[in-house]
Length: 46
View 1 (spheres, rainbow, N blue to C red):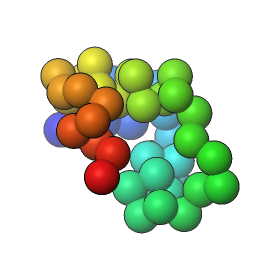
View 2 (view 1 turned 120 degrees about the vertical axis):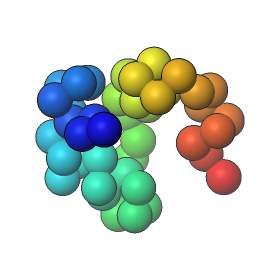
View 3 (view 1 turned 30 degrees about the vertical axis):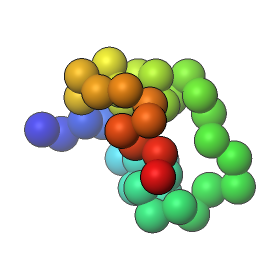
């Protein structure tokens, strides 16, 4: 699934989150990702 168009977040932003290359995390973005993937926030954060 191409997540970017589904949730309206740029692919580069998703990539940066995945590779831990961001200085801060936007909780609204994480909520959108969780909703699209049908998961909980704790599933994304290790």
